[in-house]
Length: 334
Image (cartoon, rainbow, N blue to C red; front, side, top):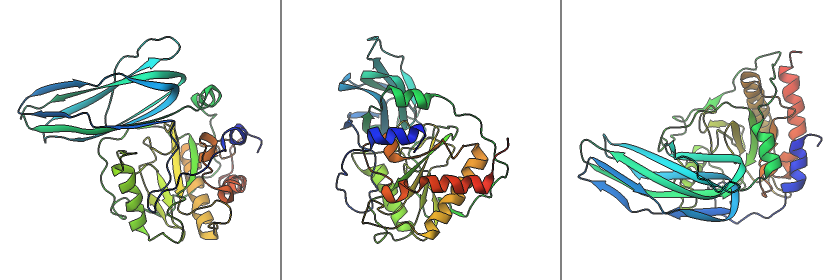
């Protein structure tokens, strides 16, 4: 314990898992979740614009993840926009453009949102906005204030070598639906998949199954697999999204690198083994030395920002040991 992440654990680590089937990989619990088919189709025209109704929230939220699933004509240009109603001032923000996913996060919560889609197509082909999903939660002012602060610079005494990582091509990943949003890695969040368990793991096929769920399920519809890295029970590390872009694993997501350990590490379930821990500490050591991430204050469990027990007590209780090992590996310049 001792740092603010452990304190937030005491506040937030209450709740039960929602049962899901294998190959899904547990995602965050949302206070608000919708999937909408806007019936916006542009065909035989060079320009079209569609504005959704205003969606009012039952409770104010400080984090919203908006994902858009569309079919684009070959030469069309599609822009998505979102705006938000500030709960305190009652004023709307300007429309903000995004491509594929929009990650709203602010200390001041919002009480409503609205989307707009604009299509330009000189060839007058067929473009369809098939669906958009919105997931929202409220972390609270204390956590959002802490996350808004840029961490103090950390300089490792030694640059740790990048461990062997199976590339996206290596596990036959699908391409993302849209362009990624760049970010600067500042914090690392550890997850477990919960389902699949270690016994259900089948190598790269499991990683593809998780990606398919994240991209295709009506409750998610994300532009790609949500995590940046995944670690199998035999210690194999898989590249999810590039670590230099925003993921979809733990609101507010921006500047947070997500690592998912395949298995269920709640009590009386799977056990974390030496191969997993070796791969994890090597990956953490490389990330910390490369991106100046202080392991003593900027490693978290998913539960620090969620009501889920993720990454399970077995992994979470060992996070201080991993932090110590990383410091031993890379040291610190004073």
